[in-house]
Length: 233
Length: 116
Image (cartoon, rainbow over the protein chains, first blue to last red):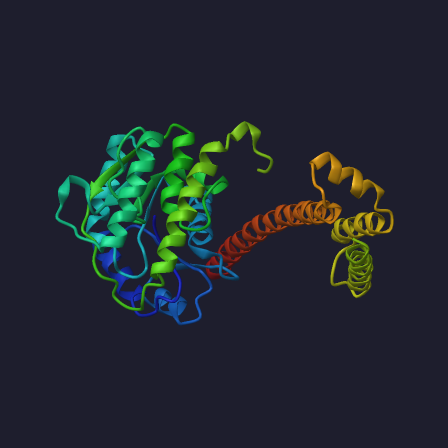
């Protein structure tokens, strides 16, 4: 299944779904609408996608987890997540799926910086990514070149874990630590990202700083969590 | 010292009155009013009978008993706020799980209706 979390993406969602259908014509596409205020749902349905509509805004983590829960309940073995703003080029989906199926990894990350594929990003983001790489290296036991990438694929075992435990805000990095607690493996696949097709990014300089602090705290809290000692399900 | 204790007495009574009023109006559930009423009651007792405050100040090495009162107030409210943070986190988790379940059930119901 191809999972597309979306919030106010009416300008891009239709084209993203068409591109996905062209690349993966027989694979079901599920848009998880995080209570958009625009016509994201209508555009997604017109483009031929199933739509899971959340009753109110949950944020990216809650939105993605809802899609994972449905995919798990429907019995899917692999789920590839593609953002609804068009930054993730669907032509890389087969490569992600191929590695996911053949390598035995539980998660595959579409990486802008793996194998030095010439991708450039802003200085602030580059510093953030460098910090996360530095922090995650000893935790994960290997370097993750693009820890902030949301272009990821997961297998059924990872799906099962994520249905029970998935970070709610800025989930990409913390999700890696959640999987590491289970001794799950991940692989990276080189991809190139595009500019978003429509809308504006909500990330500002202050939000970037909050993001770094929040994620670092989340990573350390996740390290401290042990399944046997968890209070809640 | 006396003026501060008088202010604390008034504030404690006001806090108790506000909480009781909110409970009566159903703005606060009874189980969550207990922390606030408990906190206000402790502060009221200490403001009316400052003996334990003087003892606490001497134990903490403070020359000024009002400082002990301020530290105590801070600790009491930190405990209340921490407890409320736990409650809010539980509620948020439950809310997210329920919203996701509702969306999935609606999705499945829609699929069933379309097949019929």
